Image (cartoon, rainbow, N blue to C red):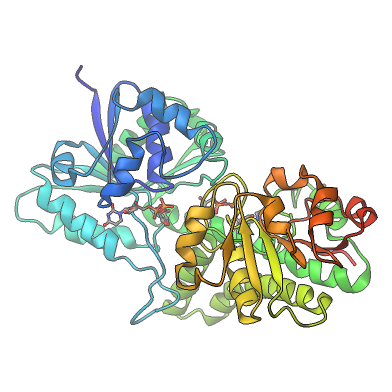
Length: 453
Ligand code: UDX
Ligand code: UDX
């Protein structure tokens, strides 16, 4: 069968994999290929055990894989064949040199651009899917269009707004699709090419087109605003604990104001995930670069409050356990950064475990999907941490449970049985406000949660 278009995605991660699976599902007329430098990851995409857990993803992949969706490591050949190339490689925070700890490390983006140039024999549309600092497309263009083979590439920015755990429904029914390009004739044509892909299932009025820089900066801004809401409600949670107000009641009351809205007001032990911290720090770096220190400070505090929220939670537990947890078993319920994912990047649970270790406690971690990633993250301290798939086993002889991930299954556990298994006084710290505290207190637990006296 011949396909209408050949689309390639470089980077088979949490963004590239699900996004391409959805395009393949909605557009049987296109051939979709996903490549990655990591052969183990590609093998996993071609197996029954996908490398990422995302509700609904496996069913889609199994339906389209081998028909119009392909995973491979033949990067050069795939680049040569492709008409449109999505770039979805990771852009971690720089750990060295200028901007270390804040700026994005763009080495993979640059390498990918050079790779595209070297393997191409004609111009193509290159789509930035990764979240990037504003004006990255300019560097991509310099690399790609500085060739002497007469090839012209068009760069388009198309940031992905899916959230993990709900990726499939977010992709299927997005609030909006954002596509940025140059206002030139060629630029507008490239934007229209990408628009046509999404128009196979997304209503045109939800597809927003902008200039390149607005598109790049919108992604950073969206993540900064979302994270800011969590930090704002978390800052109020601390005041609630001092005053007898209840943060869940406040979130409900303010969320009813349509100007504020009810989403992203859930107080928690802290936000995690690969994007929020990285993108805000990137925004901070950009503001510093453009000599806007006040703006940089404003946003940096969103990250500071988040770390403070996690640390102060561990301190509250410590105080409740007579200021010493040395040698005590402490169960950590959930290591993923949120429910319904195996992703642990920047998870607040990771900081919790490190702080428990600093106090020489014995953390016992349980999670429904994230134990393999947890073991990888804690590989330097594996002799000091325990892991179990069974929450009851994690609770056995524990002095406290710190609930860090809002897995629904935790609320449905047999808490009487857990109480019986634990050391007394059995403390539960609900870092996600998902448990029925009154019920737990009746069972005999000491109970603490976020933003309630
Ligand atoms: C990444 C970025 O973190 C995010 O900012 C951006 O919005 C989308 O891309 P994610 O998909 O979650 O998000 O990252 P990750 O799961 O790490 O996937 C990136 C993949 O790219 C990895 O599988 C990696 O092996 C691959 N890669 C990286 C390449 O194929 N080539 C490279 O040169 C570098
Ligand atoms: C986020 C953005 O939502 C998405 O648009 C972007 O593409 C990538 O970054 P993600 O990191 O997958 O997505 O998850 P998200 O649902 O935004 O949650 C981020 C963190 O905030 C999680 O740790 C979550 O538990 C926490 N959170 C979220 C809260 O603590 N309270 C809330 O009310 C909402």
